[in-house]
Length: 112
Image 1 (cartoon, rainbow, N blue to C red):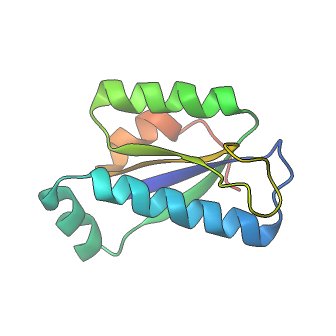
Image 2 (cartoon, rainbow, N blue to C red):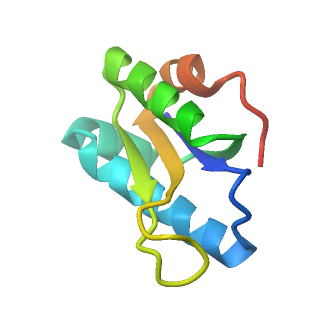
């Protein structure tokens, strides 16, 4: 079991902002998973990787693929209280789900 969080590199998020957006994405996608998947992922150590994307478009394309594969996913938009404009798309979480399924969506991306 695995979850991949894909964060944008083209919007200049600071480290704290990046950490917050990754956390939002992780939890949001987790909440969309069914009980069996959540339990299996939690019991297996909650494996996560954080990956890079260079555009908002990339996040939407990956989300569409995840939807087609039936993988829980969540796109995150910033509230705009600090560094970014309200509604800025910052991150996408794919999974938790079977590692091979998550890798079908995000396997070509680089680690953050």
